[in-house]
Length: 200
Image (cartoon, rainbow, N blue to C red; front, top):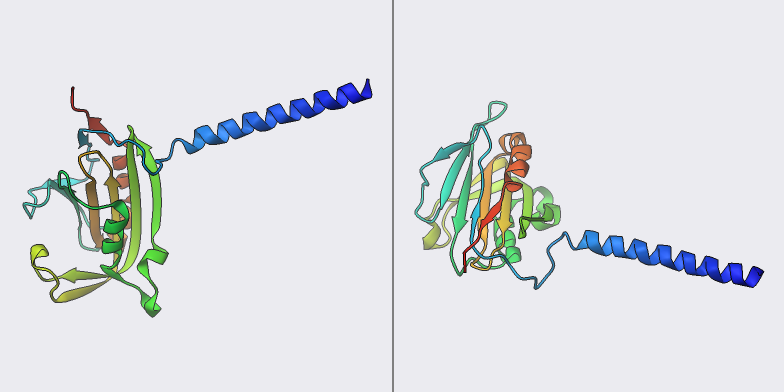
């Protein structure tokens, strides 16, 4: 009888362990995984209260919003970009953006960057936040490198939404105090992402 009870106890513990592993796998599936099928269509979004929609300052921008300055600082600007069929990988774009910031003591921006991933309406989304001295180029974006103006105490808050037609970029840059003031609002904004799916 004791041997039978021991065997039943072992089976019960194995069942609990398998159940726990299953729950962990389901939780992990909420995060985007490499090679997963990307949704097709346009990314729709809703701008939060307080964001000021503006005429895009460049033809390369799909949309543009101004974030009013906080604590006496200047405004920040969020630009929306979408290049159908192109745009590069998430990692390549983040690396390029990180190089636009200089850190004290020669530290590397990508080592200090805060990133998180989520899936919103089947859209894999990567959010990144960095601070430092912003190296604002004085040259036209299409003309390559040029003189740079150093703007200390700046920050970047950005999201990259992946679709089968290419990534959508939402990038805000401005004084850190202004960016931090609107950071929660930006998180709420990302949660409004929806796919305008193409009917077959």
